[in-house]
Length: 398
Image 1 (cartoon, helix red, strand yellow):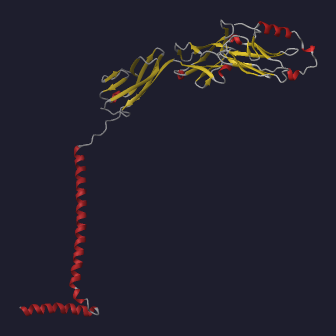
Image 2 (image 1 turned 135 degrees about the vertical axis):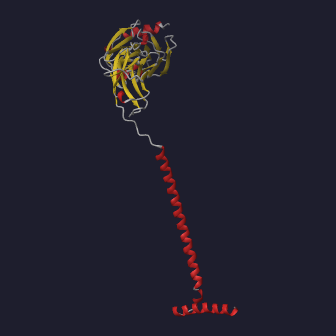
């Protein structure tokens, strides 16, 4: 990269003239104004210089090495990353893309009046931290002991901050260490955490979170799941729940642990296991229960972490009564008889109602001849007369 030596010489000579050489100038109007800027490595920064009274003079931007970048709209340094954004009598704005750590420093905006007036702009380049790496989770931890993990992130500038979490719970007490990277500009941050673990922590998510201003109010994190070894725990289930003499029985020893239980041993308190019982893996099976099988049975479960003993009280009940065939037959017969009786009653009721209706119709026809009688007595006489008339007719024909 080259520079314009004449422009730089003019600027250097003008810098030797002090403000006191011209006490009558309007300092506020002629003084250039700039602002400090922050940019992440690889990003783009914009430098803006403003002046109210330019006094027919041009503005100039220089880098921390005092190399002129732009003099008005004239580019002085051959760097493709530097571009002109805006150039007027009152403003000179430039941009630098693909910013590196070497671009950090104090940039100068100057206006070549008499005397030369300058304004400084501090450009801070932020080194973005790398994704954190968690070490130490490869091995398993024993319950009631302390787990020790390390989280590491490099490339941050300024140094990043690391926090630890177990699930949503913050883990306090971490110790951090800063190491300067080989470029002597960024840092590697290492954080170590120790915390006690129980069997409930087996499979728990441990998260290392990195906070840094280059992440713009977000976080960068890595999570791992830890393995915790703990002693086995067991319980015994009976199938059926209320066994009776003469039945089959299965006692199931249900156990869990990390690592998984490796051995199951069945015992009976105060004696040997019944001869008709058989151990099948984690189960104890009785093919035919006797009253003498009543007692306390123990299932001893073992793993690399230790042994657990589960107990079960077996109480063999009396055999259940078996229903006889004769009683079943009597119940069936009784049901059939009840159905037959019900059907007969229904038939009798229907038949009775039919006979009553038929008889009423006959009586009505028998008294039909007395419909025109003025009173009851006359109706009877007419009815009798009608009957006798009928009889007379019968006698006549005879």
